[in-house]
Image (cartoon, rainbow over all chains, first blue to last red; front, side, top):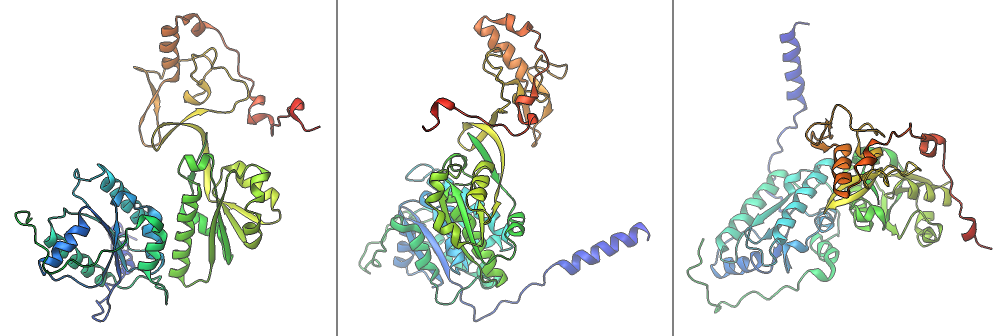
Length: 196
Length: 227
């Protein structure tokens, strides 16, 4: 076989091996777990609420004292329990209340991406985001963007009936997860002068 | 301490085969300190195996546990119940721990989830360097506390060789990182100690029969044996 034919044949094989892009199922509502830092993302979510910003209701928040408390197993447990996507939202780099917690979290998220790739699961199902407590708009934008990303990926292949990823992730965290706070009242003052 | 690295996931899957009840057994001593096979890592591997099984639609039960030390019989008793209930045990201990498990619980199938790689020193957090080859006849009293057996790429007893240049070895590490020439280090430290004359000792060929080349080694301390 001539070299060009071999190359053409190789290209044909590569093309055949590429999985076809799955069409987005309009009825698929992903379940997404968000590990949110108490000092930034959780407050940003509050702010997004106060600002009456819309973001998908697919996300389920778990509040942490710092994303540095997040470990590899917590992310895996959420995936194992069927979460379609998981992300950590920590402070802006260099602004962690505990100095480096968010940098540790990023490393761990990256490690989980590698582990998922090894398992044949899309690494894009986990992500790390940074935002400050004043970034209500970014919180909403991230939630929207990530939900869209997961909708395009489709459901987690390890979905299990009757298992709540949110409850499983909370359980894995044990005493680390902080209790949820009631939503801020409508009368709560919106911080001014801290817009993105 | 003994260090180990986890095997690639596909190799672990192959070792587990089609067994339905899997126990991932960590060891909370050396391999826990080197962040490879402690209880935390055992839990991670167990979770990965469950995710994989769920993805493939296989009904597999995966549990995890950890012994304080897998290389001692007493500590194995503490995890015996879980081991007995499993079809296969994936041990994350060093080669010693894995064999202790396989022997203690024979004929239970015990397979390794890690590759034991060296006797290493934690140089900084998450970095380990080989420091001892367990050669059975330590020479570092004459070499300024630097082991030529594992730190010289050629294990030379009379170094340095012609491949030593500016304190570096001609050989590089697996990631192309530079390796310090052990004999250059020895010379520098002997100088600092004022013991340069030790550099000029002519050391005869090493007796490797005291190392693993002499067959399986055994150590008995008669005075300490139970009466």
